[in-house]
Length: 296
Image (cartoon, rainbow, N blue to C red; front, side, top):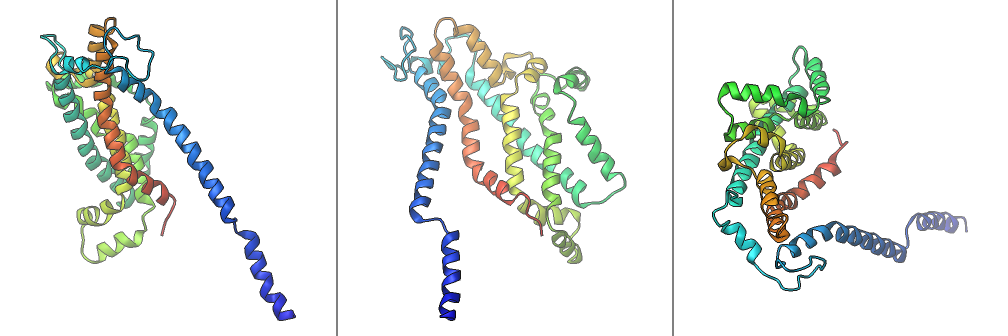
C-alpha cells in the first residue's frame, strides 16, 4: 500500500501541474482571435488607402470598396503630364539613400559596437558614456551645423548629403554593443588563441552571432532614411534629388484639393518597401528578442 501511494502521489502532483488539453486549445483560440482583431484594426487604414487609390474622381470616398474602380490614379504616377512631380525619380532616390545608408550603418555600427564591447582600451567607459549622453540631444539641434559642414564640403544636393547622416547611428552603436557584450568571452578568446586577429574575430565569429541585432538595426536605419523629410528638405534644392516624402508633399499640394486618389496611390507606393523589408527580416527580429538576456 505504501508503494502504491508513493507511486500515485507524483502522478497526481504532475496532473495538477498540467493544463488540460481542452483549456489549452481554448486559450490558443482566444489568443488567435485577439491577434486577428488587432491585425484587422492595424490593416484597415492600409486597406482603405489602397481602395481609395482606385477610386474615380467623382466617388465620395466613403466606401471601403470603390463604386467605380479605375486605374487613372496610378496612370498619373506613370505619366505626370509634364508636371514637375516625378514619383519614380523620387522613389529611386529614396531607394538609393535608404539601401546605402543601411549597408554602411550596419558596417560602421557593428565595428564600433565590437570595439566598445570586446576590445578594451583606455577610456572605453568614457566613450560609451559620451555616446549615451549624445543620444539625449535632439536631431533638430544639429541641423544647422550639419548643413554648414556639408556646405563647406560641397556635398549639398547629392546622395552623400542624404545618406551620410544616417550612417553613424548612436542608437545602433549602443544596440550592437549591448548585444555583443552578452556573447561569451570564450568564443573570442578561443579565436585569439587560434591566431585570429581582431578583424578575423569580428568577421567570422561576431558577425554571424549578431545577425538578429543587425536585422533590427537595419530595419530602423532603413525606415529612418526612407521616411526622413526634414533633412532632405534642407539639404536638397533640385527636383531631381527629391526623395519620396518630399514628392508626396508635392503631390498633396498639386492634387490634394482635386483628387485624393492620386495621393493615396503615391502613398501606397511609398509604404510598400518598408513593409516588404519588415516581412523579410521579422524572423531575425523574433530570434533576437528570444535570445535577449541569454549569456554563456
